[in-house]
Structure formats: C-alpha cells, structure tokens
Length: 237
Ligand SMILES: *Cc1c(COP(=O)(O)O)cnc(C)c1O
Image (cartoon, rainbow, N blue to C red; front, side):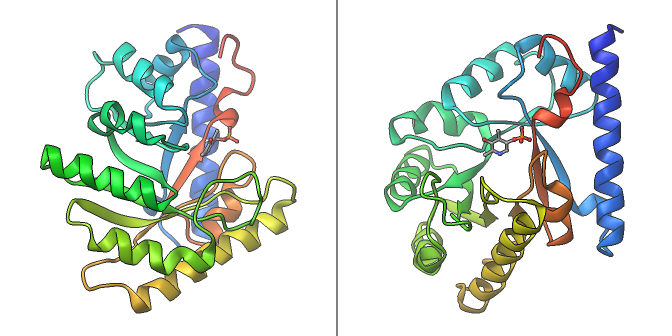
C-alpha cells in the first residue's frame, strides 16, 4: 500500500471513530449516520483509494466532475454517487441516471425539471430539499419560510421521492453557530412533518462537513458530507 493510501485509511478510521463517539454522546447508534465522502478535491487515483479504503458512498458538488468520476470509476462495484452541489437544469439528463440521491433540490424550477425528466424515464428520483438555514446570501436553497411550499410541491410530484432536508452551516461562524444552524434544520424538519402529506417521513438530515460534523450528529444528522478531513496529510489529492 502506498504511503498516501495508508494515510487515507488512517484518516477514514479516525473520522469513523469521531462519528461513533459523537453518535454515542447523542444517545444515537452510529449506524444511523452515513459517511458520504465528498471527492471534489480528489484526483481520480485518490478517489479510487478512498473506495478501496472502504467508502462506497461518494459525493460531488459539480455535475461535470460527477460525470467524469463516475466514468473513471465505473469498474468499481456497488458505488453510490450523490449530487451535493447546485444542479443546473440542463445537466439533469446526464446526472440523474448516475446518482442515487440529489441533496441539492434548491429551487422550484429545478423540482419541476427533475419531475419532468423522471417522468420521461418513468423512474423515481430521490431528492432532499436544500434549505438555506444560515441565511447566507451566497448560498443556494429554499429559505426556511419557503420550505413548506417546497415540500408540498415536491410531494405532489409523482416521480419525486422526498427523503428529507439538506443544509450547510453559516460560512462565517464557529462551532456554536454551526450547532444552532443544524438545530434549526432539525426543528424545521419536525415542523414540516406536522403538515406533510401522508407517506412523507423526512427521515434524512444531510448536514455536517469536515469542520462541523460532530455538531451535526448531535443535532440529528443522518448523512455527514466529508471532503477535506479525509485528505489531511495525503499527497496528490
Ligand atoms: C465540498 C462540500 C462538502 C465537503 O466539505 P469539507 O469541508 O471539505 O468536508 C460538503 N457538502 C457540500 C455541499 C460541499 O460542496
């Protein structure tokens, strides 16, 4: 094993241990928290090494990079790709067939276009509704006060399967601020559940990145999206 592959394994193990500890501390089982390796900073070879180290759920934030990596790693069995970044409508056609979950359903026209494509293919599309929970003007996502309408729209679409919510913590902020943002997403989910159409359970909360995943787990995260922490000390990422 190369030195960087060994380092990658050690990083993965350390992150998994931190996930386990954070889950335990919150009285949760660590199996309730999925680790999604966000590979946007990784070259193809390093991405392959991440899979070999045991990650089978991979995420990308740019459609073109997702297309490229999915093709480059197509020989690896049972990979699951997730789209975590902004998806332009003209990129749906090439992206949707490759992914098992879109975390970033962030506007109404995108919901409509996803439904249209999924209907054409007669294949349901699994999505999370992205919420701009921190209110950063640079961020995508529905405002919290638009969330109920977004949920009603998505739930009314026959080919969309809404699994929950996704958000990022404030860009400028410490861990306490991140924890408040994550608590805000969980509370919003709980409010939405009271008005959600039957059959919608919103089980997934995609929240937490390298710098704040422990806070996210404390607030109920079910998917942590981790990139840079995996790469620490790895050359050639
Ligand atoms: C890049 C990215 C991540 C991972 O961020 P790190 O801080 O590197 O762990 C998670 N989610 C989204 C949407 C991203 O774009």
